[in-house]
Image 1 (cartoon, one colour):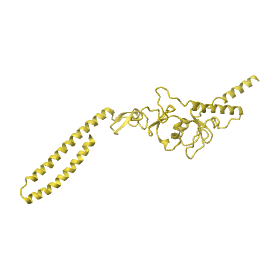
Image 2 (cartoon, helix red, strand yellow):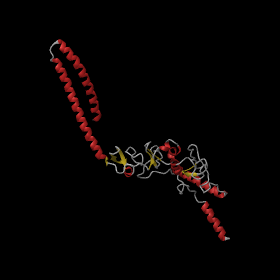
Image 3 (cartoon, helix red, strand yellow):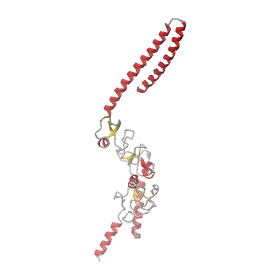
Image 4 (cartoon, helix red, strand yellow):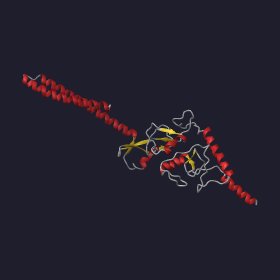
Length: 283
């Protein structure tokens, strides 16, 4: 009899344990529920939907569009995830789960993932100072868990690459791998990160960004010098034409020379303007 009671107690204790997310198999972090009633961590279901169709990982219910995620913890009392998605029958257990869910929601509201020394705050919540959990390489912002929801739910925002929190989003970052751009691929004429060098750009002609910058800077200097020389040459040519016209004798010959000179000088002036524009761009 005592053995039977002990077994029942163990089963009850196991069933009454705090519910866990079915995806990460850990305690809920910023729990949300979807229309079928199952609950997951916000980041878990969000990342799942970013990789797969909009469906429930448990009951496989499909949604035509990404549904609204229910984050009202103090109201929602859905059952924890189990193998068949069935609700618990014990009233006492249901009450315990409700209290635990309310406690989780209250704790999230009171202690919203506080910022610690050296961590990155989310961009648009200076008054609460929540700790950022992901950075978006398109929005160029860092978000805490609750404010990542649009990137998990919205179809368009769902295409934005999310990476581990990046302190300086203004720095050049690889849009594919979320890592700092460290090399220049001369084969494909593009900046690459360490992961790129081991995948798509493996075996390519790679140099440091500094080395490529010096090479391009020297090339621009040479081009600038060449353009300035061309400007001087064409300016001198226009002056020579004007001087030649001035020394022509005879009214008829002078008129014909002036007419011819006007066309040549006009073309030279246009070329000089274009060269000066190019020179400004090179500078």
